[in-house]
Amino acid sequence: MDEAGVRTVGDAFKTLFHELHDKLREQVRGLDQGTLNWRPLPKANSIAVLVTHSLGSEREMIRAVRSVASDRDRDSEFKVEAEAADLLGLLDQADRELDEHLAGLTVEDLTQDRPRKDQEPKPGLLWLISNYGHAREHLAQIELTKQLYDSRT
Image 1 (cartoon, rainbow, N blue to C red):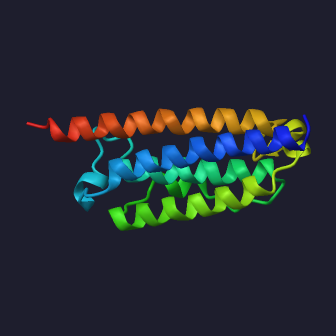
Image 2 (cartoon, helix red, strand yellow; image 1 turned 90 degrees about the horizontal axis):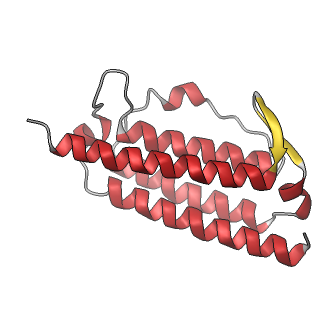
């Protein structure tokens, strides 16, 4: 892969993640704190948790791809309660950080194995692909959680 290929890949992931962030904004915008923090089952995750966790995972992933240390506290993501403004702020921050890291993406970032916490090292491109899929799964969970909340009797 050459530098032009890196730019193409970086631009593609920038588009994909920004579109995903916009879809998350659509789900969060206008929801009250009760809805955002409601859990459909005792061990299920709320919309606030799913957004926070998705963005925490994304941030850790892009930092790993760029070989930048991460201070992520994954466990705390599952205890969070938030208001819409908090989550929208996290999404804005995620856009900025993603843009910064993708702008500096190198051939080595995409092709060389990158460690990520306690997981086996993988090429950066594989981390980008798998994390995007992970985030899309959580978007679907958020959509379903909203439907369940709206259909309570």
